[in-house]
Amino acid sequence: MNWVLENLPLIGERTLQHLATAVPPVVISFLLAVPIGWLANRFRRVRGTVLTVCGLLYSIPSLPLFVALPALIGTGLTDPSGVIIALTLYGIALMVRVTADGLSSVDLHVTQAANAVGFSEWSRFWRVDLPLAGPVLLSGIRVVSVSTVSLTTVGAVLGVKSLGLFFTDGIQRNIAAEIFTGIVGTVLIALVLDLLLVLIGRVLMPWLPSVSQHATRTTVRSRVAAA
Amino acid sequence: MIEFRSVTKRFGDGTVAIEDFSLVVPSRRTTVLVGSSGSGKTTLLRMINRMIDPTSGGIEIDGEDTSTLEPVKLRRRIGYVMQNSGLLPHLKVIDNIATVPILNGVKRALAREQALELLDTVGLDRSLAERYPNQLSGGQQQRVGVARGLAADPNILLMDEPFGAVDPIVRDELQRELIRLQRELGKTVVFVTHDIDEAFLLGDQVVILETGGRVAQVGSPSEIMQSPANEFVASFIGTERGKRALSIRRTARGRVLVDGAGRTAGVLVDEPATTGHDVDSAANSGADSVAQVTVAQDLGADATTGAVLDAAAGPSNEPSGLLAAEPIVR
Ligand SMILES: Nc1ncnc2c1ncn2[C@@H]1O[C@H](COP(=O)(O)OP(=O)(O)OP(=O)(O)O)[C@@H](O)[C@H]1O
Ligand SMILES: [Mg+2]
Image (cartoon, rainbow over all chains, first blue to last red; front, side, top):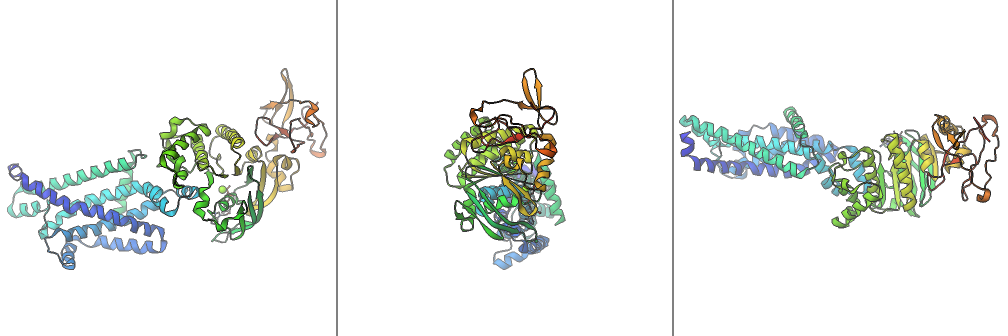
């Protein structure tokens, strides 16, 4: 406990670094995955290919990717941008599948009704398909968020700054409190971001009865596990 | 006016849903397409607003070939009401109704204002405006569906079994409401149903369809009821005949009409001959001994014999049943 109190400023700094590395991939991968997922859902022929590529992408182990990317883009090994890009790729890999599934889960009666009353394809996507895929997208981005926050710690092995450094440093110096801080901190960040996402979901999807969210989340979990 | 000209629709899998279908749908009247499942009713309806394009032949709206019109624009000026309302579950009632005007570029505030008025029009309380569709009963949802269909003030309203999924009492209510609305608004309504009673109740023109969209008979309800064009039509309306047959029963209060199930269908009223029609000129129609009794009503040009007309029913003097001889014809 002493260690924590003595190192509060450092813990704050590492927390911010962790967030700075973990949040951009979550946001960027969501923004990129939506159009790709739309393509995959809209054009049957590309669907298989896109989803396979995403599956393969997700299966690349993180550490080699963290090492290879900086070399590819010419940044230093300890620069967070390599980790950010790698985590974005994982996020995309996951979210594309979720987006495609989410869009295809929209009730056909509803989309046909939307067509019948005169939605153009563009306006239907923004005002009907995307909002109605919302619950699935939300559960997807929650999984991405949690896994990104936890994968961010792996970068510490290479010296990229995050709460993960507390594990590596704590293990080397044999300080249990430091290791513990790293773990608890990471879990807390994941929890807070998750809560934030749920709140955003509530605000953006006021038509949902709030109880159903647990159910959709579990289905995505199992979907992710199967992928 | 909507005109189908030798329309054929063959789907990708080879199904010929409609073959050489021609029909004129008069303006400001209700035309009902009635036929059993798979006869192509929905396909016909969807070809009007280009949800489906015909394989051959063409459809004209007020002389304009629809194939030259942009589908999305066309749909925005045609109201569409479907079974299970087809409301957008994520939009409040008011926003569902305002959808099409907003797509058409009407300012949001104005569109919502008009949506509230439409709630009045379809007989819903304005307090429902802020609810989501799943917070409404089936009947209420259908009313909202009708309100949405009317929102852009279209000339044409397409209705695909709009009352098919509600219970009989609510359906009855909705039918009456539609008759009232139609009397006020005078839209060109194309209504699809597989319920012949509903067809006769609502239709100024009824089109009886066989599979492949073959027209078995087109006519006013009374024309069809009096002289079914063929065996198919006879049996199609005949399956309901037992229910539809009305008989006169004398009661202390006067003569009432009783249907096959023994329920009172109405009171028999003679009107003075000033209407220009024969009052109860009974004539036996041979074999099936259904008495041809004219109940005097002011029928205008559409004089009907052999069918009892329900004065309350609506604009078109739809027959409410056939008057049978038993137990008594005066
Ligand atoms: N997209 C499609 N692809 C292939 N066949 C179709 C398609 N849509 C309809 N059909 C077929 O066309 C025929 C007419 O269908 P349609 O939906 O118009 O019938 P309907 O009269 O509306 O029936 P219901 O009363 O059951 O709604 C049916 O045989 C149906 O299977
Ligand atoms: Mg149908």
